[in-house]
Image (cartoon, rainbow over all chains, first blue to last red; front, side):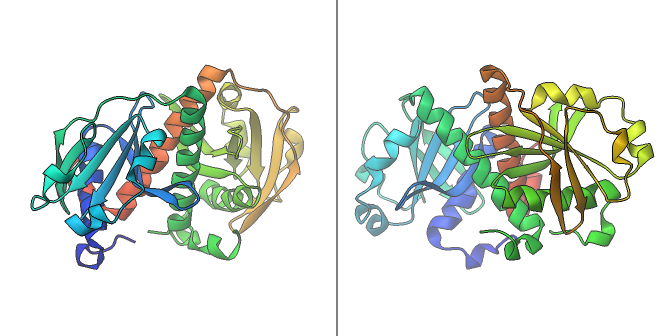
Length: 151
Length: 151
């Protein structure tokens, strides 16, 4: 069920560490959360008031510079963060975004992201999507027999 | 991660079957969902429009008659169902509630529950609670190392 750290891709290693840090901050998150066709967030998180964060994990300069879609995430969250390792050239990262420095075991928030609140209708739809995605994955993990049954 | 059917309590056996049926109906569910102190739903489910169902699983007449709190669930869902096995005396069940006949492998909806819509503020809070509970459980299953870290 749980994947050894050595079997994870570099971005997934960072995501595991950030997910632990988000948990400590009181947020619950879903990895690889689909937002719309061809756009998924590395981590989407909800705090107890319903605030929505997205964290994109970049394992290298190349990983960052080859990603032309990051601006597309801003309209799907209240706060947007990057997560990188401690060797990453953080001066590349755009202003007005938050930052975690992460490894596979944890992460530290270096810079809080500014709040840019979602419209209520989008927040409602995203929260429902998050809820259903998390529950579906949970059910698939706890009842493998489901796989033969449902799409 | 997944528990053999033989290790589940009778009510949990029914819950597994109902969860499969809910999935086929397009709903995603969380088992043993806390609603308030000393009240948790055997299954809480969300459909794609955000409608909230609760299903309580009763493994025997005694299990049903000893439960004095079932009416308390009605204010936490849009539709309320019972799930019982095919030997259960269904004439005991109150009117105005839905019914599944279940076993550990699936379930059939025998009677649709009437719709009694939640107030928007409660729906919003419940959907957020569901989302966070599902995500937290998912993270605990996929990252056992989290247990040492967080409450």
